[in-house]
Length: 360
Image (cartoon, rainbow, N blue to C red; front, side, top):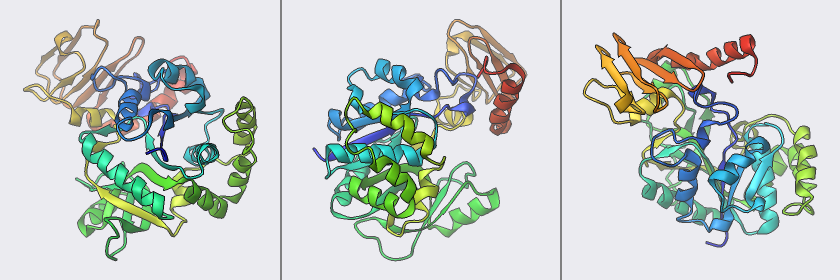
């Protein structure tokens, strides 16, 4: 286990959970599910069962460093991978890989978002352990693919080849970004597509080799920091390194190009908690199908199948609403049809255009 590492990705803004998730306090630092723990705390606690505590790193924007320190106080400063500017996942993963390889050339790591829901954590950890063991002895780039339950247009898809599985792993054939409903339906019917969960497993050697091959300039940027990683000079180096990197995801930068990508089909009760509707689907409902974060302060008349999220000191009264999202933060109230919530990002953009960053 000493060679096992985890990198928890916690840099997103979570704008689809606006107005609760805001720039100053994104969803990964909020107890979105009412469990008593924030999403990042739950993710950290999950990995502690199979990864040494000192080998768990959190990658986030430097403006969220104080939130990570508050919520995961046991982490040392060295375990924070702080991005000076947002550059998507590829530069962040390149940085983390070089930093961890400097600590341990034999490191194998799992990269996972901070804000996903795992309903069957033991199954998840068994799959991750299987991936880590495989990555120790194979020069593979491994991803976990979720068996699709429906033709969802909000997820990316991974197609695997028809060849026999090797230790349960399938050779990846194609990646497809969020498809149309018609294409997603075809994917589901074909039986050889999985949802892309954005969870990756590989050795530091394998991923750095892939960066050298497919993102040479970016790799050279972080290679230059070999002598300063895990020292007091690291932050200064990184502040200059990130501005030299393109804004690109790990999928576009590496995974769609590499020929040594394998997927492990998995089913551990996964959700990326991407929208209010996803919270609704996963939550316990009353007899009218309503979900509330504080049911004792909600009175519903002739209202059903609604998602209500409000501070516990607010009284919420609904009358004649069906299939709506009602979300209140301290200074914002949003009421939106549940089937139109994909427009929340557009709403956030409009609010920013009219009021600046005050409500963002």
